[in-house]
Image 1: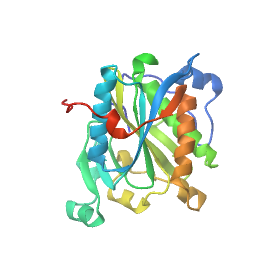
Image 2: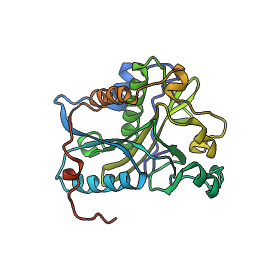
Image 3: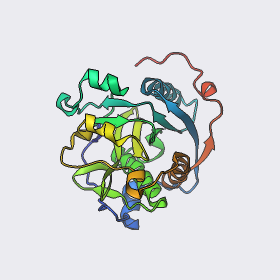
Image 4: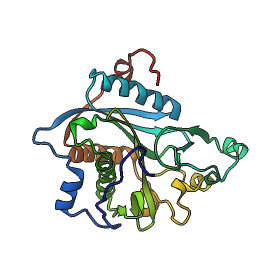
Length: 265
């Protein structure tokens, strides 16, 4: 999914199954400061999309106010379809009655990109990160997030990479990770998703990210076995720390982090 509000820039490309050359990765991602930054890892478990979005807004407001440090939210959503700002109605192939029968909710959202599906078995990262502490480059932020998914997939023996013509993370079997972002006053919202073992049949309700001629894939599908989301979550946390150059601290009770007044946009 494309980025909203980002200027066009050249993109370092890694073909599917290849790692990014070190010098090109360093130039594009620029993610390892001399001193590790502090950041918080906030695991929401399984959460409805609207509730998780409210969490993002509250954390975003607190990050802008300087009340908290960068926070990486990880969550699995209850089944839902979300429409980004570049979505087209014809890319939703199932009607309201069919979606209701499948237990799939529907949400319009303010991220960039097209239509996508979220559900249990898919891990979603929402970094609430102040890019002024990095490079003020939205595209570089997207590449960092893609790199997290590439490195996480590699831990499980799945070769993943980028395609020059499409954002996201791809394998020989299809797209395994999607990216869609919003940046407000240099603090990021939304993020990336990685298909671990979701119900892949639900993707037939949409044209994922508006790309009709490419399939989607999951780690479980590629490996031909069950994959424990907890193991993937652990690998993803390590990849975030590595790629973003941060020392992650487990969040305390989520409510204590979110004890702020209502957020209005």
